[in-house]
Length: 292
Length: 84
Image (cartoon, rainbow over all chains, first blue to last red; front, side, top):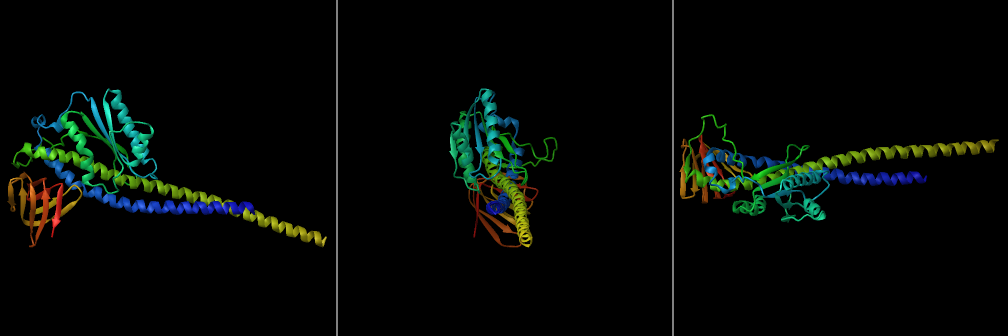
């Protein structure tokens, strides 16, 4: 029964694979939950910052802040791409890379020089492979990005923007909509798009804040914090999205393994049955010949 | 009045307080209930929250701002850590 033994081996091999994918699915599920908590925990700060900047901002102030400078033509731009360090997450990284390539192509077609900053082994590996120069690359970020990471990433481009060496900065990341939806997303973080006034600008229900020392000094401090926070949020969302994508991919792999195992088992049983039938036929045949 | 201490990574405190003393950019500022709407930059120092039911909480903060509106005090800062 050579065929049976071969099938048994294959079944065992698929069972081992299934064990691994199922474990990875469970690990990703629990990591995703924790990462999701961090996404939620980051909301109050972002909301508070948005509200205060929105209520202090007025278009007359815009000219005084380099971070709000709207260049007439974008000649030099930076793209910050966030990917993961590990694979086994389905199309997660390739989607992000495709989004970033599309953005870079669009910018370059319109005559903009683009410098690329890449986070994550997957993105860095890809751009190194196609031979595209990166202005910076980092592969040392963990599953739990910190505000320090965000600050390190964005300070350089923010300084360049203030100096006038860059006219726009984009971040490409995976938005965490839900465990199943993690679309690659492009946000322009510089120049800063001032958040809308809370409650819309027409309603008169505005607090008449006492401002210490002044609206200008406060914005001066909060605008860079707002940019840093945009990058921090992109980092935590991407971290959660990565685990969500991995969970989905590993669940699909486990389901596939189940299906293959079922098919192989059916083949194995059929082969075994065929063999038994044949043996019986041989015995009966032999007995008939003897009794003849 | 209500108070909260918020950092980019998480909310460090949220609850009812009877007074707040914060290290503003130019010296300490005290906030009591029904304070006028205010936004002030913070410096480096110790933030003290007197709980409504007694008990003081202390946080080490540096930078960020404090906002008072509708009897709600929000301390929003990139660097804050609870002190014993």
